[in-house]
Length: 137
Image (cartoon, rainbow, N blue to C red):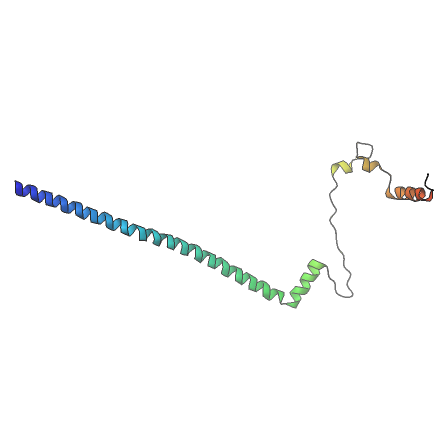
């Protein structure tokens, strides 16, 4: 009986040592595995950023090529700066500004005091007449 107890005790010890070795191996493999997965994720992000940068470079090169074309420059000058060639007549159409409802109301219908003021030329003539009079001391 004693021999069997010793053998089962040795088996248990061997199983415990084997289990301990397996746990140590798993723990020692987990840290490098975590670092490996983090690095793979970082590589994926960097590759995406590289692709975006390459697309931006291509777009900028196309823009540079367009800006070196004289016809494109002339068209942009005409469109943006309203340049015209000699002998041409330029017309610029302006969008009318929307009138707020308060200003659109008739002067007698609760319009602001500015709408009921006399026209500018009347005010100008009044100031000219007042300037002709000598100052009262």
